[in-house]
Length: 112
Length: 112
Image (cartoon, rainbow over all chains, first blue to last red; front, side, top):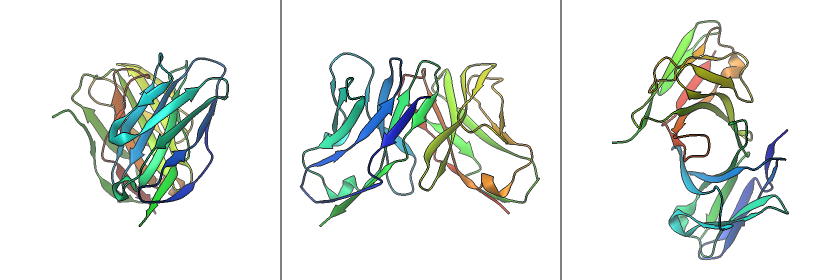
């Protein structure tokens, strides 16, 4: 069965430091990959997605992610975080049967 | 304005009392989906719909029903709610399962 694993439930990082949020998936078929962000008390919005083509995907707010097929990973990165990046981040996978599977989320805490 | 609306936003009910949470989108999207969000579990897909009259089970369909009689609407029905269905529910829509999902604002349901 397909699954998505976000390896860290919480990540503390100092303001202006770089951050990487990790996501691994398991699937025997081609997938579409997504990162969504949920700011406090809000719904989710798309950060970026990978459908095909270049494995390095750039999204909103300075985030980017790299699709690594051999390691079945889709890690999210930002070179310098801001206090406004405080949120919960979800990795998601859409597989061939049109289901969408989300990871359990990673809370990003920005320290002053 | 392109949006997904859900009603009600907050609902407190008692065990066994049938309820419906409505979801409507104005973007002519074919794919619609319901999720529940629980602490530590991320988002889990309840049901999804590829188009009118086409629905399928997600990962946690037990205790829920859906219908898709019109393209814009995708109501979630709890025939006999139980306390373990207390959760935050999100409706989402997209062009297809590989497209960007647009989320509604959420419905916080409490079943006593």
